[in-house]
Image (cartoon, rainbow over all chains, first blue to last red; front, side, top):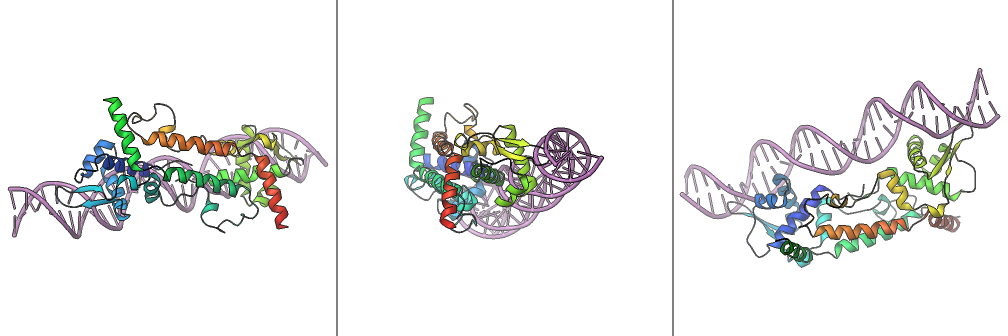
Length: 143
Length: 143
DNA sequence: AACATTTAAGACCTTCTTTATCCGATTTTT
DNA sequence: AAAAATCGGATAAAGAAGGTCTTAAATGTT
């Protein structure tokens, strides 16, 4: 099934929340999880992954929490998804050159290759700066 | 995970096999499954689904088997995938207008919407006539 | 120094989906 | 009537997804 996992969806929401308040101090996991409607223990774990990959910084202890480790304009949607889900391959035959024994014969391989390239490009051109700006605009229209 | 299921992959192989021999009579499930390296009982079940949706015709009894029910140029990759996997939604929030309670606020929704449109368009422009032609060409280069 | 708060890390569990297999029933040809 | 195929449903094993819990470690507050 071609569907984004909940884990990645949650991670995106978390990153978006931090992006919208990037000037502020670290935010506690409870605050983020409540605001974004995500199970807090689960989100904590996802943030740990994002911390390891250098997308967020964590601060332990009282008053601690998480904050972006980069400028939102330097974080793309694709990066966050792949941090959580691992590398995206639309089809197993794309995992690496020569992985699929049917490559020489199979005409569908090329189709997937092209589809994947376009798909990843698109997601990689979407930064959290853009998303945050868009979120602020939506918020304004609503209020 | 954004990955094609094995079931859909198998169905595509089966349809491709039939497309390459579309002028011939019905082919037995054993022949197709061996040629395409797919478990025959599994492929049989997939073909049943494809038969229900009108992509193949089945012939019971001795000498029976399956044959395309349409011209390969009128069958697209997307149709076969969706017959096996159900409708494709890159993200739950796209399942239908108003499904996602966060639509008003969430800026990522629009990104997915656009990505999905491009993705489906691409797959829907790929017919089995094209695939079969491409397969024949590859076969020739090899032999 | 003791305590409360908060993340870190990993074990664990439950549920759902995927990927099949098997078997008896049905249909068709010979 | 016998043989060859698909039909259709039950079932099972394996893996992934989604989430909880617990203990440890770090930090700030009293």
